[in-house]
Image (cartoon, rainbow, N blue to C red; front, side):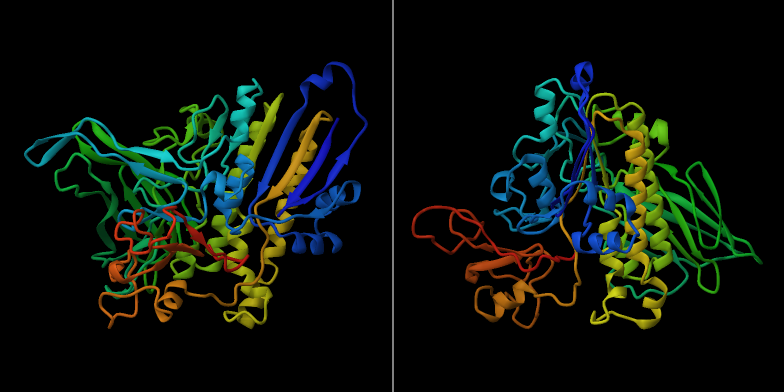
Length: 534
């Protein structure tokens, strides 16, 4: 029996066909397609306009019911709800960001590195004997673990909030929350002759000023810190760039790669190796985008992703599943949130560059889906598509004339961007429906909807103005990125993440001053908006 179920933030479309009997009943399968941020209002509008015939078919032949998303309405929270069947009080994920109550320092809410390393110091070198451990912080049992307990095979590709992947007999590939090899969640590099103020803050990236001599320059691509060095110094590999004296072309030489790019061209994946010590190194993969050659040279380098053939930290179960995927479809983004919205925000990528990157990522996921559908003969298959979410974050302003960043000229060029992205998701659905059999239940779902982002509310500013938080240096009108200007001895509450407020509770926080009167330790979480900006 083939069924279609559509849950978009969450709404349901169910289509039932005539049931088959006998042995076929024993080979029932479930295919789940996850589209991040797909909005039911937009989807219904586009279906009525005839732009999404495959979603329309599901709505017409089945059931269509809007449901609620998580509270707060954020991707790691909502996906954790789906994974565990629990709300944040059960699985423990309340935001993208959490904090260590002992020192107030933030970390990604879904994973944390704990413990230290036992080392032997030999001059400038240290020899680590044991590695710190990265833990998945999401509590509760994942649905694929339950399937595994019941001997039902499952493959879960790129689901968010599953790094490092929990130990299971299922095949899983980690998604949102997976770092790059620097241990960050996406640090790009931008090489340019355009002078960038040294004091200018570059978010989630690094700008490097270069100067050409005889059309050539040697610089460095920065890698991770060296755990074998006593000073924990950064590693790096030489990067040489040569530009054609007449044509808009550049030759990039890095490690064992020679990459010839025309202006406006993306490279394929390049493998790079960072040396730590004799017989000790770390490999990663990155892509280059030649934005401009003249008058100012501009070269974007993607975050250096974990090498799926040689993962420095677990990104799949079994451990070699990431290599199996790369063997079949080629290198792919292992970084959890590969669409570089920060680079676009800061003009290190332009709109068309970003859309080309999004297209690359979408096609990468299509290849993963096709790869798994070819061998999908039992159990459950889940494949996650992120594209709808970042495209809406970056281009919604072009369909909302009341948005403060609305620009009529830009809107004229990009007002159909979101619509075209939804149409592309409809084509993915069509492809999947063609490849499943009558014994498969298809579930299409999303984590939250979408809307305009016209204003925001700064929690720590409000807390300061109302006497809940106090600054050490009152001349500075900021708490600091890591609360370095907060006097916690005179602070009753502080905010972290998109919408979380923490009570500075005595006995729980490092310098807690608030007593709850009953000895119970509580968190307080306030949700501001269903349209929290990523």
